[in-house]
Image (cartoon, rainbow, N blue to C red; front, side, top):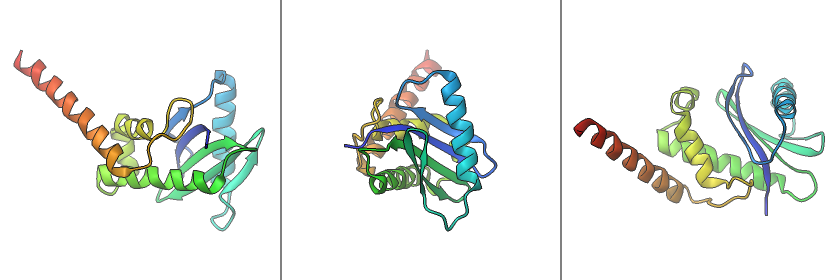
Length: 156
């Protein structure tokens, strides 16, 4: 079973657009990982391998349009190709939810991007859902509840 340590989305300019930590780290470690991993991934040529070693774990990444989707995984037990597939499934699910997702969708609707990620990966980094339809259904249900709450506030 795959255990993801973190999921990070960064723009080509190195701006963090989304980050979720699935392991406990102190703020200094998080800042170091964020800075070093982002710099390393952005400096790599497009023909280079999407998997690299970093400290005590592996980094798996994939570029989609103007965003890099980066995941940190355990060096010993995790499958790099499965992690690439999880990243791809996350992108496909956001693409379906937003209708051709772009960086601006994530910037202005970051809570929805986090909701999609949370429906796919548990807080310990385990994969819990791979079905795009199930994830979209769960997020759409949350959207409906939120819109009902907004309607109730307006009516009262």
